[in-house]
Length: 299
Image (cartoon, rainbow, N blue to C red; front, side):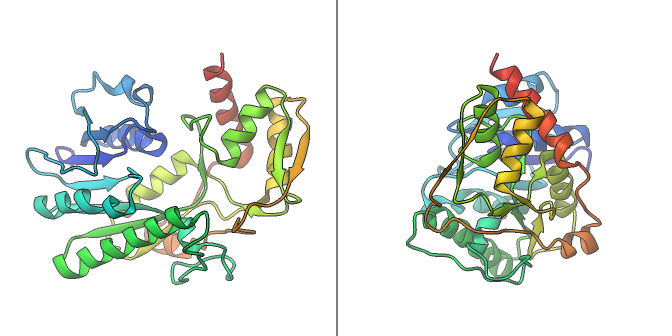
């Protein structure tokens, strides 16, 4: 494996950049492909001098041309158009005879009626709601991935990623942790929707990458949940960030957005049994690292 090449689309993004580092440490040659719409060169610039690292600026909704053999394509890019969501990365995997790992999401479960959510659950998604474009794009991508597996016999993997956090998240990401941390460091009010009783589970990025690597090297072709099952309300998360950052921020409350899931929790029995994987980094430790990163980039 140490001489094999891995293509990571979206490789300059939050999760993709950690994958680049991890796989280089494992001895792989890594081709990092990104159009830098949401990714950043600063996430991977420290890798430019590595002899087995290559950066390619490219939009994956256009055909991908890579010379030589590819061991695996890790698809972590998210084109805006659902029509182009999977088209060319999986065609590249097919042409190269490579295995293919799709980064899917817990959003495929929508506002779940089953708790926690096993991979066998089909979800409760509003296809025409404000979150529908993202939810259905990921569900479509999973469907196409499985079709390529069944019809073209591609060795495909699908990971359903639950809330992941850590250094290198974008301040304007829009998700709870970067939003709360950015406000806390400026002592600005932190907005919590509803009464803040909706729950989430937060998985530190290095734990996720460990799970991805195990899945990549497994014989599993069906979807696998990777996430931390420990539950926390959004209100408690906000208070924890205020405490760790020693912020003077106050919490303000606004109405819940439409179709905002009340709860989401991964059932990780499959990952535990088949991949021998479980998260290791506690929330306080992970939040401290994340807050320190945001403090650094905020000057």
